[in-house]
Image 1 (cartoon, helix red, strand yellow):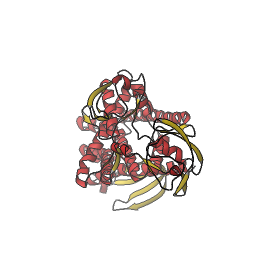
Image 2 (cartoon, rainbow, N blue to C red):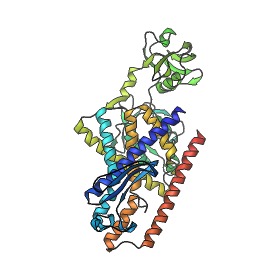
Image 3 (cartoon, rainbow, N blue to C red):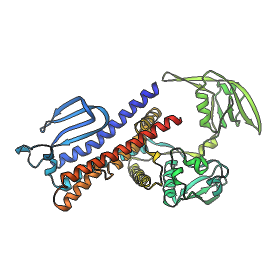
Image 4 (cartoon, helix red, strand yellow):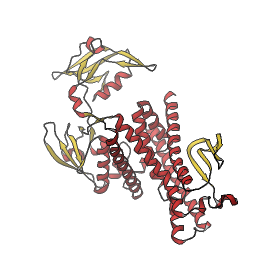
Length: 451
């Protein structure tokens, strides 16, 4: 119940912030262009709060359904315009100004992403260097010669500074020609080139959660090797030693330090059998776990720390205020072009439509990222803001992109499209959005049923 409420609250906050940013773009550029704004609404449906302000008596309101928003400009197509307001209606302004107003919404979403990434890079982002973990037998990765511990230095001659950039480059290469060229460094410092060939299998591999399993390797994670012991901790009291590698707890496999944390956290104050490897011999040690309380939540505590050798795979990606500008611009551009590519490949059938997420899935991600802290939530907001900007640029009549097409045609032919053409276009746009949302809800429900 708490998790559901957290997801819902984080979703409402995220959507409200991003919609406000998007609509403010339309609003402020419209004002700069001399247009009269009648209403600025966050949400749809019945107004739950409103205020009228300014010389134009603009109504600012919050509405009951927090799944979008809108800016309503004075428009002669919707009713007569007073003599005093002649020239201030949306359709009275020059076509370039109308297009500028329509572009401003998506543009402000991209600007928000740049700001969010800038804050992230100034704060510092703990980053894991991309490296190869377990390699599955008879897989694409095995055929390419990938080995446990290989560090991924470059993907298609682009530096792989972290897993996010590596994954974007891998997917981009895979969708381009079905081949992923990796520059690797083994544990002895030797470098080599390996090529993973997945031609003809991209749709399956682009299904959510299928990439690594399909390629045949998993990201490297620090093994559960004991690098330090708390003096008063449960592990030391039970005789666990430095250098022991924990491989199981109560019969549940431990493959990484992350697995160890997850399993121990759920077993506060419980007696457990810890299976470990010491000097190539397997032992089972009985341990009564301790606990730690944080924000009213009690979590299990074993009292062991990460092996120092694992620290070689981690670094802090942090920049000064000026350098962070370039990094945030680059990150936003990379994510934006990748999102456009994914949409295009979905239309051609090269990318699975299962990647379309609906409000349920977005809410789950919002809750998880918000629970993890400010930096993860900012990263989530940046990615969703970019997606919102890209979607609104699609040439669908009910979206900004479709309206830009209408305005561009009017500018070229010197007169608006006929009302019949606009109505037909709106109907096609609504149908396209219904289909899109149907896919999104279907995918959300399918994920829930699978889980």
